[in-house]
Length: 537
Image 1 (cartoon, rainbow, N blue to C red):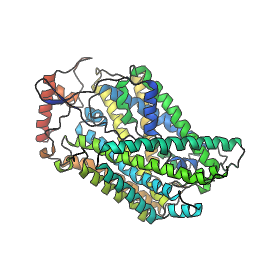
Image 2: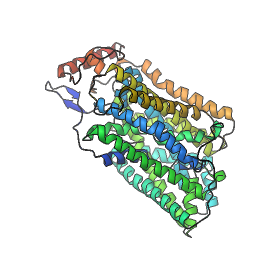
Image 3: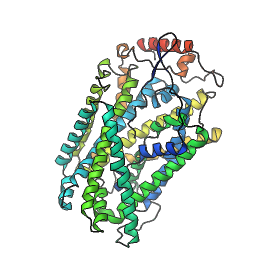
Image 4: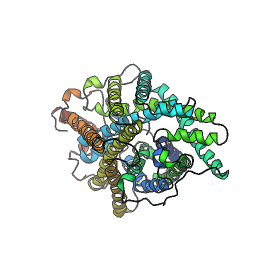
């Protein structure tokens, strides 16, 4: 996930002096640069232990998720981003297809996914902090302590929030260093140590199981569904596709290169953990840190394990610092169209929306309290990961729906990149993506058999109620919106159907390559404001 507020509008001035929205100038983004963007926005070491429980089967799951999720979703997002180049990101894509109710809902669900993600990474950060001490028995006991984990998680989050009030610049700087020091370097070290470990013939704890999993026992493959969340973030980076000189040719190659790197790092990193930590002893939060200690200890450098924990801890701080404000900024930009009260749209002198950050913090704090309800820190971590996966996949399914409808309602719209294969390609790509997302979503409602969860009824009940509640929230907010919520100083470029004076489900009459005039855009914007005031939009 990325910290860039991709949905923020870009104001410009027309010849009449009114502000409106225009697209940014095209740059030159190479195939390799796009691949790096995709890799850095997706790759993370935090989830490796959950897949290490599967041993060599983890490679099957990584490849399967890449084929049925990462590749098709990347292609769909690329087409949408290259077609609808005005500001708004996924809010614009979905609103063009289904209207602003579902555009707002999709935008909100993306924000909500990040809110669910926060407690999981905070718990991982607390475990990392515990492992900078000696001896390992003390580290493990401290990392498993609910009170310690909750206290450190809340302290980390609210310190990051207070720092965010000072502006995004310092947060971005910390994020950049954190990504390099806390993710890229530790990931490279993990794989390098694993290779040396194998070449030296050290003891192998890997379970020798079949490459293909046993699908007759669904409870054993629930953890694999979280891989879909590992691959999240493509909808954010796809907005850069128009900066490529030849998107139709270069973007698929960028995706292929990025997929190879991502799958390779995830698979190799997961296997290294499985080499060092017996599958029965793998803990979702601690085993990455235990693996580092075990690897370094095999070379009589066990103290380096504590250093690695410190680096990973710094990486977590960087992630939190970046994502505290990023998604909230995108949410606020869309909310200015009238989806949140004006009191929640105010920014301070640094351009930071403090009210939304406080509400975000309240959500994170409330969700973190599942530590008290569930028997272990590990089970709390997993249930929040599963809820984040479900919320994210609901948003993904909405985007697939928008892609299919816009192929029908806007057939003549100029597309900088188009999913290859014509109608058959569209059906194949979207069909595979939808089936994969539905499969992962269904699995995410089930309790995993590999960890202690307490009562399965309570576990599943929390997921069902939580997902239902957070899915209903944006729809309730939309239904309760008031004309006074719309910020008159926030001008959002109208949707195509608004400019044409049609409904989103009606087929566009525009000929291929048609560009609306400034007068048509301004008239549509005025009509949209009027419709919002009368509750018709």
